[in-house]
Length: 285
Image 1 (spheres, one colour):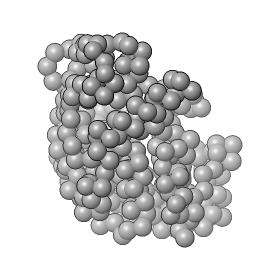
Image 2 (cartoon, one colour; image 1 turned 180 degrees about the vertical axis):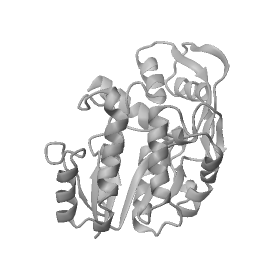
Image 3 (tube, helix red, strand yellow; image 1 turned 120 degrees about the vertical axis):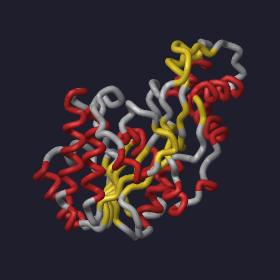
């Protein structure tokens, strides 16, 4: 059984994928008290003594979503430091898989069904988060063991209340209109499907060092709000604050489909049903 080190196990992605990974792998999930991922020497000692086959890096320091993080100003620095602490230890493991972001393509421009190879023709992102993820991807491309699962939009249990699908559901629970800043098109994948993809990436030889990760279904925020309203029997309004369309944010997932079939993914409608049940339990529990 492969021995896996999962970073960020207390975050949104980590806490959702841990049990799925444990069905197939021997998974270690050190707490912050056990291992400060920003501490270079501590990481060195931990990795050297761990005999890990694969590092799965889901750590994403963000004080907006995790009050254990220090500050918004240190978010990019901490994220890059964590990445580099494990990147430089690559001789002690076989593979590191980390979660990238569609922001690598520069969100100042439309990102519509974009392919992995298109990144070479795009301007380097000007925002700190996008630029940090861009740097990580460049390092992965020039490595032998580092792989970028480039996430666009993900949802599931324990998602932050600011995330759109959770926002829609909570508005309906509170009997409030759903507010959309501006309509735009996304491609959402359920976090349990992300867990399947990560499991497959651990098990399989990977031809490329970056894979766009999404469901393959383009959907607008207004459509999502309408689906949630219908499922929750809400008659309240959907208020779009700015007319017109914002920039699209969707990938081409051809590479991913060669790795794992999107036909096996949870349908968006079923995923929303699952999320509604989770949020209802949160509010009544």
